[in-house]
Length: 385
Image 1 (tube, rainbow, N blue to C red):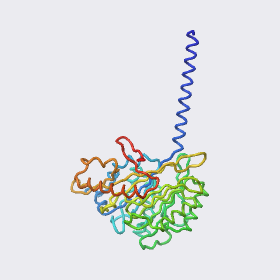
Image 2: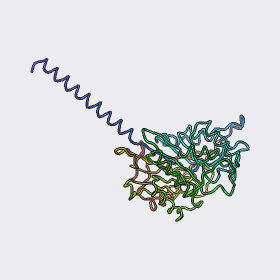
Image 3: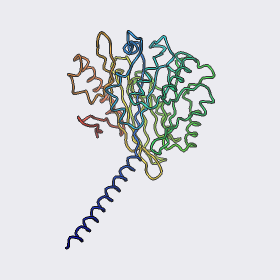
């Protein structure tokens, strides 16, 4: 073989390699673009101690960023993060239970932590009356956090329902409703979405008319501190799945309840129901209320349709050390810290987290269907299959 033919062959082989490399890279990029991860986050509350913890005593300004600093990487790893915002931003006086009003800085910290969307229909939505509902909506709008569940009036509700999320070519419809406003009447013209089968059925139809690839129903429901969902909840979930809802995500009990991933006999696709995510951050410290879960659901495009392709959960726990005579709040990913006793300021705090982990795994390992825990292996998160 002469040198000219050898060089020509080398050039052809190199060109073929480059072509194959770029083709594979393009296919990987396309595959990546066809998969979307959604992260669902439980109750974000604002008890008195949380407000005091976030206040700068000299400037009287508030900052909640530290609350999320350990959990922020997990949130940021998801394409879309959605949380239940269970306070009002009604302005001072800032007070916790029973009628919550937190500084808007709490919502700012949520955004800084990577939370993309908030749902606001819950039993504390009307804690500060009409002015509180209006103030919460306006402040979230000014911060730039899309939200749904409460509205300034019926016309804005009609125009903003469902909240459509567009990502990587997918259209995702988010709907949010509550079972109660703690007996507080919601005065016109403001609207708090209430759980009503007829109303929700109409809203699901609107989502279908908008060509939603995935429909998510975030419901505030159930019995506080009960780890087993009511039959009325399971019946509602079954009904909503039958009319086209892909995911039912629950909040309110302040403790964990079961998570199920089941095949829909009509569509042939998987559906997900999470009955209660538990508390994400609060000052509730009784057993089972001092933590919660984040549920990650992945959807993948097959042909022209997105469907659920994977689901798992992270256990989270609220660590409350005393720093400079002040109670602090840090949300921890349990699997990442369960073997780090030296991280904690006191051994009893570490043991409390371990008890929460043990109780939660005992419940979910028994009750869950096809949804496993994400475990941190030292470098990355993997499903504990």
